[in-house]
Image (cartoon, rainbow, N blue to C red; front, side):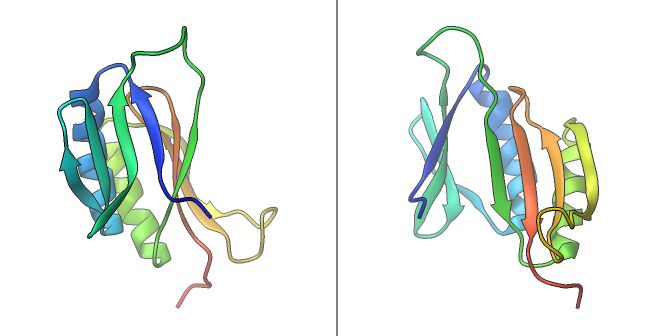
Length: 124
């Protein structure tokens, strides 16, 4: 089970603005901000963190999948991400190769990470 995840960002302010926008439809928000690290989640505990890129050389893409309560929320995430300037990787759709109810949308964040919102339940 994942307790929390952190990614390093080349432009922390740009990434924070992006995640402020795209996580809102998922019910998550900025919970902690230390200037060099920003924590997101649903209160009381952040489980997704942004930090300044300050270790290692180059870039390695991360894949981050956020849980959405329903398919409409996946679509709201996608709409918010596109409005925030995200590159579209895959528009919202079913992914039956994963499982019959897997509904997800994929975009790139400002640092090039593959960010997804996914719902695992059938359409209501």
